[in-house]
Image 1 (cartoon, rainbow, N blue to C red):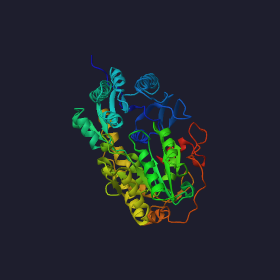
Image 2 (cartoon, rainbow, N blue to C red):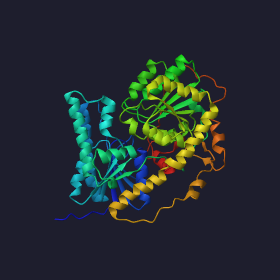
Image 3 (cartoon, rainbow, N blue to C red):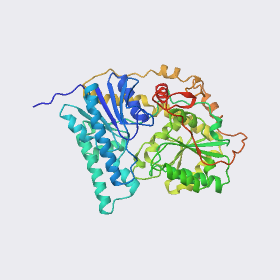
Length: 491
């Protein structure tokens, strides 16, 4: 009997790794589908203070309480099973309330092909949005599998990836390296694999005038933004700061680490062990207000991701966000990082390690004019080559193919985006830089190069940002704005 194909204009997006809209890529995808006329529902874990259901900008978001952080094999298996079961139960609720004809699963993990297979009996199609290469994640975190247990775990991860590729009707890859994996390792037809790069919405992610208080009384602010896992190299940032402070004698630096992850507590302990507490701020989970204000104040943005099987072929969102806000970037020389930043970043040979990374930061700090030039070039590249708008068009086309929709060629409204580059107060207080005038960005960046007298801060312990209690079903940001309102303002 032939199965009836469901209405593909209704899409269910499944995310396990982060809440939505905190997951910026997924949130931009949701908004792109909504703008194209699709009805969009999302299932994801709750963040702090999140409700079980909310409708945000026309997107229906269903959330479940997350499990405790996994610490070993059995707890990981429990986490995957628990999240899968909660997602499956919520998918029934979404089916009854909103309906859906397409499921998009965003990895990690590669387990939701099984749920898509069950729904296929009712004519539901499956789109696989591959955010990570999980076999490479395993090798980057644990090394090459050698013992029996390690080999079995690796084989299971490879099998789950193969099943996901085989089940998918369409595959979305975040860059050409991932697309090649889908074609070669996943044996997917090239016509089934579409590259949709992550990228900033540069009409919204715009530089602000700096907030001097975030430097904690020092001349220069260094910033790291992102997840803090074993493969992310945040410890490299701390060791580089240790070299700059305790070996080079620089007491004019402050490092802000924006984010969270499995290694957060270990990094706090490492900061204390290296006697860097008064030079480091840990913000924890970073909302859009923190990202905008910290990056708009930073002298240098750090991308310390070390060379490993995953990082070599992965696109680093933080690098593009630094560039969008005019922050010069120091990064290890990785394949996809070069694709993103081109010649606008200061690259470090991975062989040179922490010492090379610290040296590159020191060179930039000593050359304010170079930092201004890199910031301007990075912003220009982000606008011209990395902006989300053309990627959104490619993303929507994936679903149009499944639903049989033929659209006229989309012409982006450049005039509208230019008008959005003017001055005005941001939702967090600081003024936007007026980007309409030639040379305005370079002039604004001169405010944050840090060439001014400063008073060393008092001797205090490790800095933590205190986040107010949730209000309006979202976390309160700087200036009293809710998390929901922030996302509405930014995207």
